[in-house]
Length: 100
Image 1 (cartoon, rainbow, N blue to C red):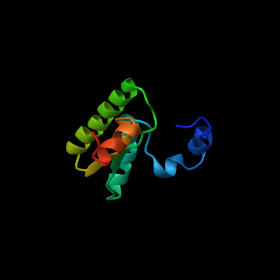
Image 2 (image 1 turned 90 degrees about the vertical axis):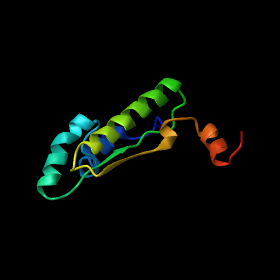
Image 3 (image 1 turned 90 degrees about the horizontal axis):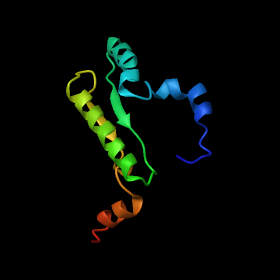
Image 4 (image 1 turned 135 degrees about the vertical axis):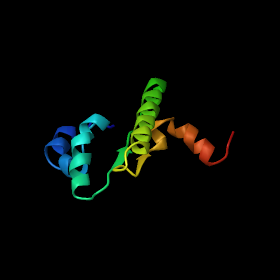
């Protein structure tokens, strides 16, 4: 995330309208609340732009946790993630262009 990204502004204004929390556990209350209104939830893990292998590994594990949570909860029909959170952009571009 760029250094200029206004996280405090987002959290103080529109965050609650679009996000249930910053972790799966934080989302539990909102998932239950939405279900009571017959609204399903999508777990959307959206992280990208880092270059460290440890960050890629952490992102992969978090995406897998979201997929597992969705597979065990009828109120979460699916989850989504950005593959750009699992590898460097240049590598993904090469794979996309079928370069080896």
